[in-house]
Amino acid sequence: MKINVFSFDADVMYARKYLPTKKCRNVRTMTMLASHQFHVRKISSKEAPVAFKVTAFEANRTIRLFNGTLYGTIIQRGGYRFDDFLQPLLWEVKRQYQSLVHKQAPNGDMANYFVDRPYDMNKSVTLSDTFDENCQKIQEHLDQKFLLIDGELWVKTEEPRYEVVTMGLGHNHGGTAMFIEYDYNENISNDNYFRADQFKEAYDYAIKVAENRGDTDDVARFKEELKTRKLLNYIEVCIPEAVGLDPKKDAGKGNPLLNEMEDAISGSPDKQSAALGVFLTALTHLK
Image (cartoon, rainbow, N blue to C red; front, side, top):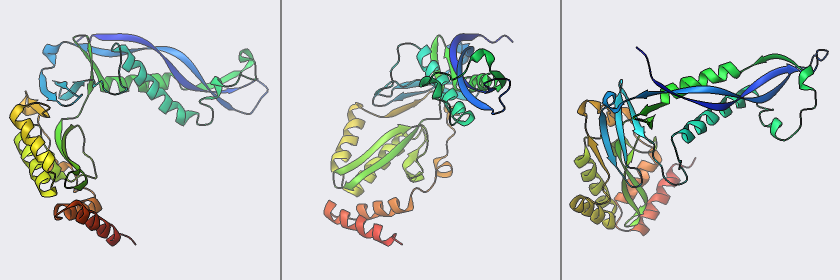
């Protein structure tokens, strides 16, 4: 079956081992740039049905399912902006070759940008270079990460999930929040994660945590979001079979010290008592 692709040219940095002259025996390494044509697979939206629709602050996105892999629209926020789909592809190529060359020529990967070459290029002898190797590795990375769907660039993503996070000393110092994330934070307990199809459970848990911490402002905010549906973090599940997470099994128990501090905060009558509880908890972990 013929695979349709979008092709584009990009510079690739690579390491070249050489001798400055035929008489020289001191092997040196320099970095060079050369152009290479890369490809990104093109498909139609009919081949990749919508699995999830994510509504989140500055992070709305659609996620499609193709050959068992999830691909999402690229989130543009903060300083991450681009004018067309080619720009993030060029950024990705550059990021990949920089990582490769850093290992291949750790002491010379930037030298060419600051000094003139102290030898005649026509007299130097090339021993080996990593151009083909780097191009192959970059192409394999692009194959795994990107798709063009109906002319729009999509990036491989993990399954969306709800995450409940606490900050500060409680009692409206810091607060309780809920986000939509795509991975697990090892510092956060698996109790604080919920699958895409557990919207109600996630919000109920967030309200319970906020109440226990004395974050009354957040309790009111969560209830208002549920009532008005404004500024609501919500994952619409379009393909139930695409939900495969098991947070209780996949995520860890969180950071033990932070868990103990959170228990101290939840059992305190005010933020001053919470601060004392956090301090005493920290002391018990000093060696």
